[in-house]
Length: 120
Image 1 (cartoon, rainbow, N blue to C red):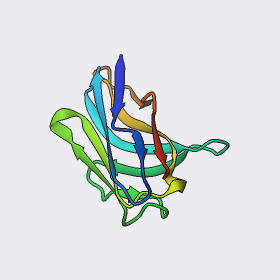
Image 2 (cartoon, rainbow, N blue to C red; image 1 turned 90 degrees about the vertical axis):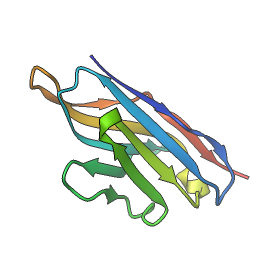
Image 3 (cartoon, one colour; image 1 turned 45 degrees about the horizontal axis):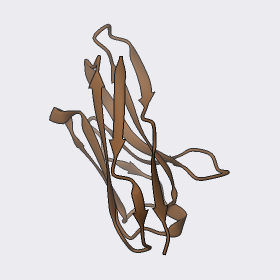
Image 4 (cartoon, one colour; image 1 turned 180 degrees about the horizontal axis):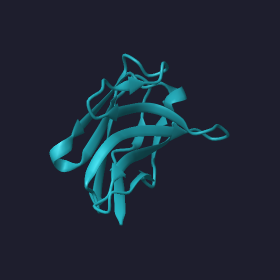
């Protein structure tokens, strides 16, 4: 059993900031990658930012220079610092973790999603 619990979403004015957090717990041998995706109404889920062990973070072009992904490996946590938010950033944000369980099975897991609304 693996659980991903997200927090930090909410309503913010354009130009404001929010910080999302996601804690992974359960049957974890190693976490290979963690990331954030988002899905706006009527649109497909898209990658926002990802962090793979041993590699540089990867960002969607639309958030480069505004969002920062960071990991706390000791706490199995990933954060997404979102600055200079725009109305088009409004979406449900999902945490994703690709990990290996103690049975050495690798799979991807999703959080339940947290709503981010950017509006004046």
